[in-house]
Each structure stands twice: as C-alpha cells, then as structure tokens.
Length: 213
Length: 279
Image (cartoon, rainbow over all chains, first blue to last red; front, side, top):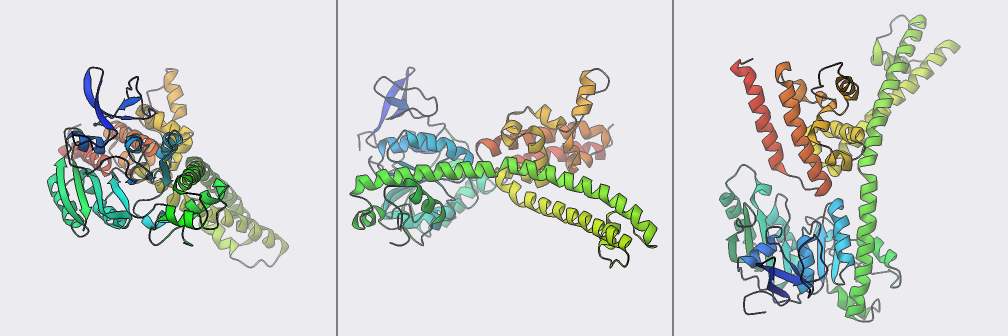
C-alpha cells in the first residue's frame, strides 16, 4: 500500500488541472487519460471510487483476488481489475453485460459472469473460494442478504466493501433508518469496521467496510 | 471436483467450458485454480486464469446474445400474434354463430356461442362442418390466451420497470409499435404518448385535426380512468415516466421503485383536480 491509504496501482494524478484518483489501464468510458496510460477514476460514477476518495480504510493493497457483485457495464470493475489480481465480475442484466464483455476483452484478469448475485450457487462452480475482497454494489432490495449469502466466497481475513443504496431498500423510508437496518442485518455474518455516507458523490448511499465474523 | 466448471470440459475448447459456466452450479466455492492444476486441466495457475478468461468471455457473450435475441422482439411478435389470433377468432366466431343459427335453435351470441357449438356432438354432415369450424375458432382463442400468458411471464424479465408501470401486455404493445426496446428507449416521450395513434397524428400534421392526446397508452387505467379534460395531462405524465422506464430497462435493467412512486404521486395530483371541482 502507498502512504496515502490507496492500494498500489491507484494514484492521485492531475487531469485537466484537477487532482483525481486514477489507475493504469485501457480507457473504458471516455475518462481522461495521461501520456503514461493512467486514466482518471471518476468518484461520482463509482461508489468504490467515492469510498477511496473519502479516505475510508478499505484494506486494499493491490493485487488481491476480488469478487465484484453488481458490476453493471464495468465502469468501476475496470479500475478494480487495473490494480487487483483475478477479478470476478457478476452482473444480472444482459444489456450492461454486453459492455462489460467489451471491458473484459481489453484485460487479462477480468472474468465477466451473467449471473444473479442473489443466487451464489449459480456461480460457485466458477468463482474460487477465499477471495480477498468482496465488492458489492447491487441496486436490489435485500442488499444485506446478498452480502451474507456471498460470505462463503470471502477469506476469513478478507474485506467486504459495500455501497448500500437506501432507495433500493425502501423509497419512502428515511435513509438513516434503512442504513441502520442493513447494518443490523449484516452483523449476523460480518463485523462492521467503518461506515461513511457517500453523499458527496452519491446521494443516499452508505459505504461500508466489514470483515467476516 | 465434479462441480467445477471445468469438470469434463475440453481444456483446449473454451466453448465446452462456457456451456458449463452457464448451466452448472455448485453448493460452495472451492480453490478452483488449485483443483484445475491438480487435475491436469491447466498447466499452472496462470494457464488456468487464461482458460477461465476465454471461457467466461464466451459464456457471457453467448448468454447476452441469447437473452437479447430471446427478449424484446419475441415480445413484439407475441403481442402481434395475440392480436391476430383474437381478431381472427372474432371473425370466425361471427360466421360460426351465423351458420350454427340455421342448424340449432339455441345458440348463444359471440365467443360463448363458439365454445358452445364446439362442444356439441354433430349428427349430420352439415353439423359436423360447423362444429369442426367452431373447434378451430376455439383453438385460436386458447392460443390467444397462451400468448397472453407468455407475454405476462416474459415482459417483466425483458423490461421490469415498463411492465410494472404499464402492465406486461401494454409493455409488449409499446415495444412492438416502436419496433424494439432500443427504439422505444430512444424515442422522445411525446412519441411514446401517441404511439398507436399514427393516423390521428398524420391527420393533425396535415392540418385536418387537433393533435392526438394519446395512442395505445389510452388502454391503461391511468389515462382511461382519468376524466376527459385531464386526460391530456395524465397521458403526458404517464408517457414521460414510461419513457424513463424504457431507458432504465434498456440501458441498465435495474428495477427502480422510486419512479413508480413518483408516477403514482403525480397521477394522484392530476386526479385530485376532479375532486377539487375545478374545470
């Protein structure tokens, strides 16, 4: 890990006169890149980017094996695979997976899976055990349940990095109440290490760092 | 070991592993890279990941192509077929009932009459023909019902937000009229509002009529159930949200509860005008 709490392979660099997070890899979504192949990681388009930007202690050092749930079109997971090792990207909707495949074609360590994160048995024959990091960004009801069901992939000293979207659980409820409920549910399988509101980048989202109990 | 995606797969052929990635499952994960090397599927860990990459890419590409092919166009064909089946069944029914009326005394009118005739035992050559003809019409009605069931099952997968908002059949009609989910997603909401009212729209463009307030979305309770002077507002609000739903369904596929709540609130506001008694 570098001194600033960022994993090796993630650096703050200057793009268009502004210091931003960046990783080294082929560009994906029209993000600015510099001559050395570093490309800006837009924290307002990436929950994990937001968590790193806010200085949360993600435990990421670079090079880890990652299971990423809710990969969508691959915006965030592309940056993850730039600094991580083998990266499994699970996404449920076909349309975004088409883009995700395009992102994976440019990378050696990114494995796209058109699977439902609520049904881990449908990919347990592909995703290896003892991954170092489980990243979760699924916009579905029952986000805590998904995290608990996927606990089986995570090494005992691994990390869960999760962005909870309040509106996916209950549109009408106060986000704080939703977050309390999700955290209470998570406690059955995880020890919560840190939480932070991501509102600076993502309205009504909570970033969570946890480890398996 | 037998659960692994590469069990029984040909190490040199990504397609065989890809099939197992799509169809297989396991109760729990294992150290697959080590298992693969031990079993001789891969030479070493790096070689395993190369093979895994090739197989997952193939599996994801195939699965996406299949799901997309299976999806919106199938719905469009199904709803057109459902309408054809219904229209044709009605046409046949008219003939059956008219003909049967000359042979039997007590023939109920319309589609009930057709089912009634189809269930009878013919005793003459003429009766045999009319009962047989009625049976074809009944088959067609059953086909229509099966098509509707198919649409109701499939639409929520293809377009979760549109289906929640408009119902599965209207969703299929909108996709059919637009040509595809992609074209529906890219259409402005004003177009969505008048899909299915093309005749009225062209009459308007030629200066012969006022602009249509709604097309096929009229069949939805949100529009039809709103009093006439507020239907334009209801249709516009409904089409606006349908348009957003189509974009979410096409570009992301997530179910977004908030847009449904917002629409319900907007509709309540429009309908409250009637209760307030303003004209």
